[in-house]
Length: 144
Image (cartoon, rainbow, N blue to C red; front, side, top):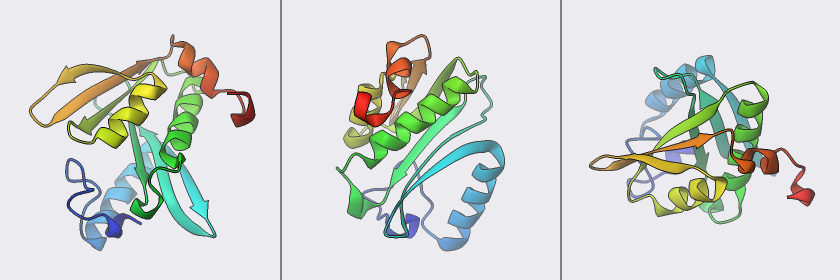
């Protein structure tokens, strides 16, 4: 899935462009976080996680296979990440996103993330868990 990302779909250098770099990146992430995957017909089509970071708030990441954009996969992965992190006792989540990645920014804003910092090419977004969004994402999909 990650190797199919072209330069247009890569954001902030992620996912890495070469197989060995993808493997090293995933190995580092697996050791530091909680991960969810989406599969269709046995193929990986999405990956969401929250990982420990240098700040007190875990960082969110969500990647969707480019052939499966606009099907709600990223949104559902994000809901699982938020619900699990809240259940695990975290007080909030943070993420960095490319400032031109409108698809991702739209998903994160719909989840309740707010922009807390603007940099040259990136935005830092945060979701405090006192938000009503957290209660909503804990519900089964049919009740949302």
